[in-house]
Image (cartoon, rainbow, N blue to C red; front, side, top):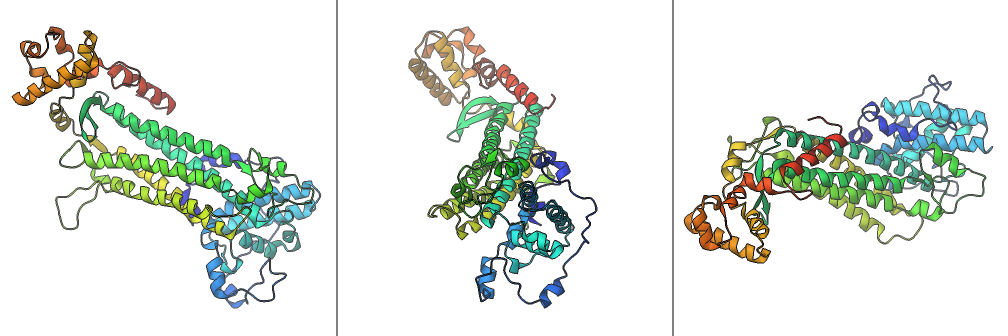
Length: 510
């Protein structure tokens, strides 16, 4: 089912259960329910006549098959079953505490919900399209199991606040799961940096050779935005962590419910203050998909760089066979397809965000059925971004850098030119003048087909008398790297401190 595609087993992500740890107001699940375990056979359902809708009191005719098929959402929103049951448990416990249902009714409801949850997780539960959505499927099945007490569960709530509550709980879990995968990719990049701690590579601007950088510095340049991605998700999680339950359809209720009790039981920060906002707000979804889209762009840029570096023209990266594919016609090909797909799938994640923005842009306040369309883009975005993160980490763990090819490529491009300009600045020459002097020095090298470090002192002095024999302490990519010293730069000491920071933060070891 969809949930298993999005989230790993609970024991693999223990933090996912923390917000829903048993609170005093929730009755602990009964290991062996007193209610007989019941399943629904597909044959029996097919033989039965169309079931009356739980909302159908004022209706004389059933909806047509076409309308029923068009309006159902159970085909995708069943992914919310766990969160729907959690919300119902909290709601039933609150109703009993407030005297709106009896303790005995509460216990029967909780036991019935346990049975249904078990049936779903064992694959025994039959999802019925004539029951429209996950909420009606579970409520109707609960009524089949426990009878009259189940009919009291919907007291002081609507599907409007129910679905918003379920969706916020689901997105909260999803954000946690994505952050965990971001951490794994960060760890893979830091480990890759540690394996190549002293390797110098060309740095590029405008896709042209610019300055030498340490490879760990470049890899950490991807770890940093991933950290912002994680923080964005955690910020989004904090903003979405407010409880709509009890807002009902849009106006709240005149019954004496305790929204703070249900909010606390579900691990929310507090109930949402305004009942209309509670059922109509989808800012949390837009923010969530926006955060995913930014992450997808970062991963796409990483994919683009690695695909480029794996090309024959660069040859800087050698992916292992385990993360490469071949060609159906060209036997010599070895393609970095996983990272090409990471680059490509970013379009899906961005498209999911655009779908939600367009969906919400013209809606009046309170709940509108259009909002049923918010689930599938979110499910797709989360599934896609988690796959992108996982395969990027796997790729990072299965590549090597072709150090000989990289070293042979370093002399081209006069990567130490800026360091030479810094040398002249230290000698008191204004930077613009230094820039001109080094530019003429590079032009001299181009005419001689040589490197800056190959020029004799006399040749350098013919360009500017400021040059002295200590100039050779600045020439060549190794010397250039040694001369970087500003905070956050690619200097060896600076990069070592950056690595130490990430090793400590990610709890790694050198």
